[in-house]
Length: 80
Image (tube, rainbow, N blue to C red; front, side):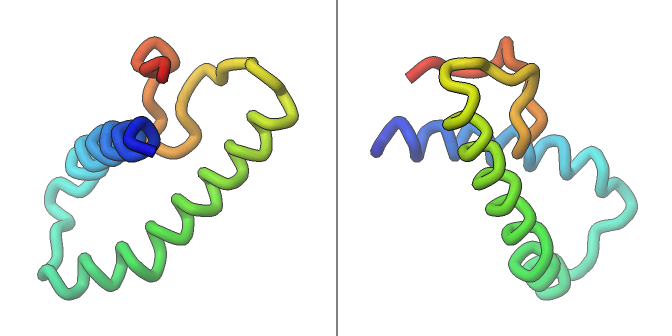
């Protein structure tokens, strides 16, 4: 369970860094950012994660070229 949380934390860190770079000049007030995150971004991440988990189950041990959630390159994957 700890490995899962560590992987999620690393993914969130990478995604947050990418998201910050994309948001330059578009940052809203905290309330607006929270609404956007909980109504749009989190459901999208859950859907992409579930799709990736299903694909991984079908492909066996095949490693994708990049993370479908945070878009990190495969070379950044940490084996648990």
